[in-house]
Image: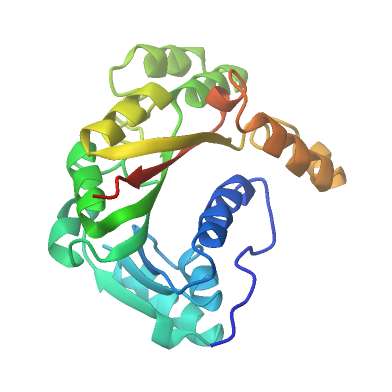
Length: 247
């Protein structure tokens, strides 16, 4: 199959993550990779990766999301390169072969599972030696700022003070993170952290009219801020790229 460029149309919501993933694919010299996308839903990452010539297994608990993924893969002409597996991220170790993946995506999942550390250990277990993990989590600092700027000061204080960084019983997430916490979880799973990026440093804060008027400048500024503390750490999400040590 002829390989295509992996990047979809860049947007501030995903461009920083795609840059990191593309760098890893380039590092692999263009060879076909086995990719596992845990909680990959309808295939926003899986299908572009499949179109670029890689084989992607998507693990997700929602049959509706997996049905949409299958349709999306068919429409993109890559149904043979995308495998849908129904199951929870907490059961990853039972759903994918050990040591077979070159790259595992774990995006927006650690916020909702029972045991984030166990999931990351399963991610590490799915990787071959030298394989990479892309981990994307919700940021506590951003949640505090966003609620305060929206006039919800009590909710901002709750997120700041709560051990899991939740705003209360109605919060849709079970936890949020700072970079140090996720880095420690990666280390405990025997994954070696290589990079941390902030995703959507400004995109959720600037007025929509500003973003729509000059998306190119916003995208460029997002890229510049994504690796620079303290800007990186107030992003809506934190992206951590790690690797299983080669044995």
